[in-house]
Image 1: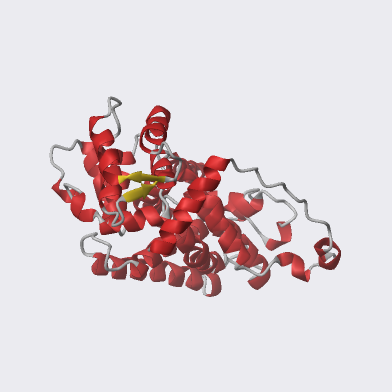
Image 2 (image 1 turned 135 degrees about the vertical axis):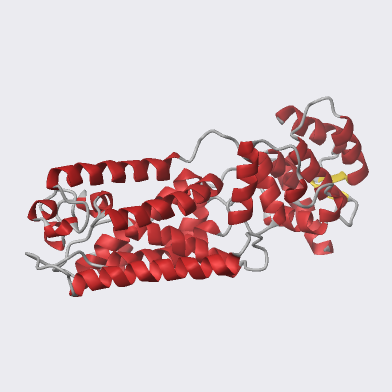
Length: 386
């Protein structure tokens, strides 16, 4: 790719104007001796042929060769879709089992046909979606260990030994930091574990395949932490167990993304499936509320709180919808925007005023070369023409 980029810059932009003629670049891309990725070559040709002014910005080509997709590139692809030989991914034939599953995931998660094709051609088996699988396996192992130890598989929270576990979170034990996370491995009974494990595998694994382990693990753990923090504020007498905070963060983020991109989503029976998912999630919340305030059996203390479900849903709709809106956008930009739209907690801290006057480190901007200045000037002139 580097050799290809240098040849493009030397052969087609000798005057260093920042632009390349469409005819010259098309000829080079079709007859170049290097073997380019077919999907990437197809995107390159779609980009150059969709330009109305006869040349292409050199920087956009470099970003595409480096697997970066700018907003201007996406607009060009949207305008030049007629140049793609196979617009619909469903027309692909002769696919193996794994590739058919990847295509199914693409239609389940992504709302745009161009994004679906991009993900389909760029997807690789490694790294596999291991985060949700590991979390589910650990939850099952912990539940089985406590089931054998307590000889009870339903409503385990009625056993005093269960509530004494070092994994259960209770607001009175908030000094033990690990409990803010570890409670996600404990479950009330087989019914809660089965519901959470099913959603983690059916929704979490496809989301992790598309958006990556970093985004999905961040969203899941944010829902878990939000659950324990919410219980510490709103229901201080009750413990909390189960991974419902993370599960509801994933589910609500995915459902919100489907609603926001309803016309572009091509998953079959999407309305019926959404109604069914909302009914199941509401039923689980209702069951948790019933166990909290009207336990079927006399217990020695308060039953687990249901606030983790609600806080996880809030995290999914706010933070999750932002993270899942564009799978190729950098994660630090998405999280920075989400943090900037939230009220900073330091504003309520007694030392907030002193910290706010601390000097900010000043970083020197990298010095640009004359070639970069000419390219930026050429791109700005091109935008003025548009």
